Amino acid sequence: MARPRLTGHVQPTSVVVAQAIRDAVLRIPGVAGLSAGLRYVEATYGHGVTVLGVGISVLEGQVEADVHVVATATPLPALASQVRQVVQGAIRQTAVLPPGRVNVYVDDIVLEERQAQEAVLP
Amino acid sequence: VNVFNRLLALLFFLLVAALAIGAIGIASGLLTIHSVDRVHMYPPLHHALSDFHTSHPEETRIWKVLASGAIGLLALVLVLLELTPKRKERELQLAENQDGDVAIRYSILQKIAERASMDVPGVQEAHCTVARAKDSLRVRCRVGIDRYANAEAVGTQTEAAIKQQLERTVGRPVEQVAVQVEPRPERAPIRVR
Image 1 (cartoon, rainbow over the protein chains, first blue to last red):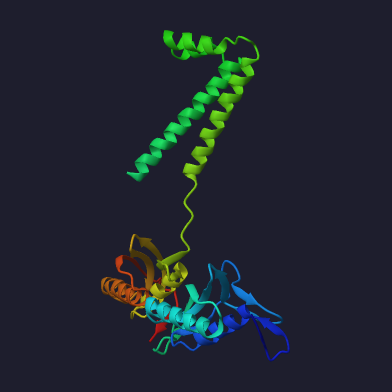
Image 2 (image 1 turned 180 degrees about the vertical axis):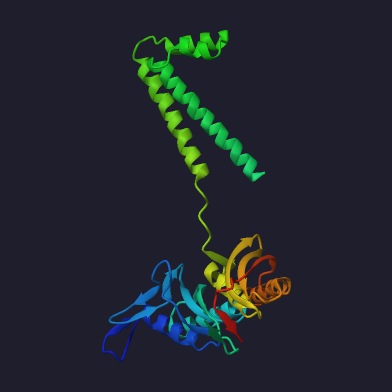
């Protein structure tokens, strides 16, 4: 249940899965980044590695994930659905157990800069 | 109806607390039956209070005081609980099923509404709050507009912009958008676009 990493340490599978989820989620158009969470820190910890914004747990023989994202101004239900699919795919690729519930938290949104040029006069 | 029920509950708990305090007074002897009679003479009440005051054996007095105190304390706690405001929801659940939850913070909805307002020509500042109303959303905004802008037109455009942007981004219907338009004071900086 452990895979070697380039750092020379052996990382727990949870970290490998979390890293795969993070990399996959960050490739989704509409995801500006991952958030560490607001009320508490959501992270997966390994030897010298912390994957912020992704929490992994195993419940009833399934891998469950909590993912905190920073979105751009896109329809959020569709984005959440896409994040869920990508996360489930990443779990299937990296974990032995099947994917379970995937909770998606939109912690912040990045809105585009306003198009019009503005000047403020005193 | 909810407010009426809460008021009734508050009155009931306060009445129980007052009766409990009175019972403590009567049982302990701090409040005499004669004093009660002076306020309102009612023979059945007089007899009931006399029976309650008379303690045989003597140690039942302390139990009466303790029981009344406990009831009074419980009533006061219930009053406090009723008066405590409900904790505000921090997140809107967009989905909650066996596949998992999708939650979005209300501060994000507020940000979206404020940005939609600011994109309306004439709007110079906006402060919005977004709340859930069953399956839809309610928005309240206070916008500061250019003092030379048409307040009615800007208000209408702002309402439409907020509704459209929130429904597009969140996928929930917006039931109501209330916009309060305030022309900015003469000495405020002017934003030119």
